[in-house]
Amino acid sequence: MVDAPPAIVGGAGAREPLLEGATRTLLLTVQYDGTDFHGWQIQPGQRTIQGTLAERLEALVHHPVMPFASSRTDAGVHARALPVAFDTMRAISEHSFLRALTSTLPEDVGVLSVEERGLGFRPRYASVAKTYRYRYLLGRSRRPLVDRYAYFVGYPRVDLDAMREATAELRGEHDFSAFRSAQCESPSRRRFLHALTLSEPDADNVATLEVTGNAFLRNMMRIIAGTLLDVGLGRRTPGSLAALIAGKDRREAGATLPACGLTLTAVHFDGYPRLGKPDPAGAPDDDEEGD
Image (cartoon, rainbow, N blue to C red; front, side, top):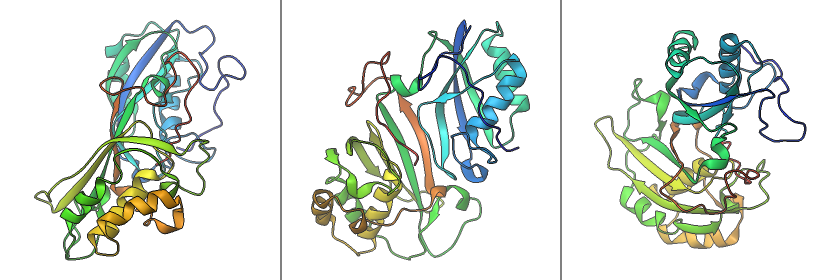
């Protein structure tokens, strides 16, 4: 079902306002296969995660609902555990919400947990870091049971060691202008990457790139994945990424790899410093995932 324009709730001018009359805020942990969705954010005439959740929640609570997520994934991107908050004045138990959502949501969206949080809790403000995974399907053959969640590289040999060497240039704080979409509107291009790892191929011949950062620019993760793949295919050297970062030119970086290979795997509310993040009760940061 496609989305209708969102209901207007809360105070005027607030970016993630509190629902007027709300007495509770609940936090959902949402998992979804993003293949058949036009991303997270509600868009009239399009099937989106936010719109689907709003529709099902409104049917349960009988008042307007605006779900607020920690990240805004693009069309085709998946999520293993996306925190989503919503406000209500209904005294329905967390267990009852979980059962009702499990029975009414479509098969490509699931709610893993429901928990009570402080009134007005917003995961986007509270998060301190996010972890994404990009999966490369290696080898000469497609694998139909994997293709939906991995990018088929289509080359027989990929130098994973060279790719791992190149990740060292990306760790830490940098201006990631070369790794952002032309549609990115974030006023700051500086991001801090805490960790980058690349696994050995698994039983399905899939190698997984895992990146944890304080925030991500639009398409940043998929451009990093494409640039590192260039290294693995011998199109650029591991040491060339330092100059690429310094040059800040998107045209010099790798391709934006397809969304199918990308999954938001974790959103962290602790365990990392609050870099570039305001106080959780304050205004939101300039994070523009859209990956």
